[in-house]
Image 1: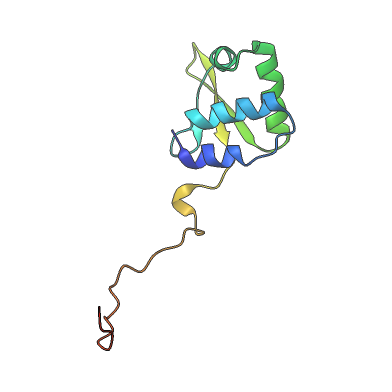
Image 2 (image 1 turned 90 degrees about the vertical axis):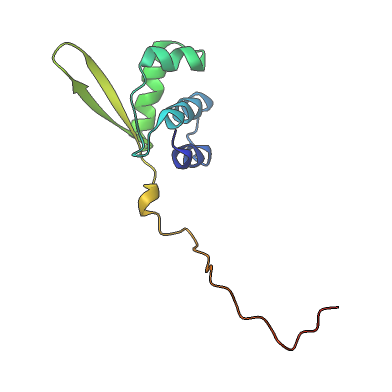
Length: 112
């Protein structure tokens, strides 16, 4: 599970509660590279909607730039790879780093 992808998905305005739920579920399954492979049937089952509804809302998420779809196949079976379009955590430069060096103690301070 990618906590960064899930945190990112919570903050997004998809414009529709079903689209938001599907984005959250895809983000919940995302790995460290923000990629996931759940089937449309599985997403429909956990979101309590139809497969057709999942297809429609995934297409809306693609159109609005929240996710990308890469189609994969091994010759016998085909599947979708969903790529969540949030910043990669390993390249996030907005993280504040704390200086762990100890500051010198104030010698003039008298502790009571």
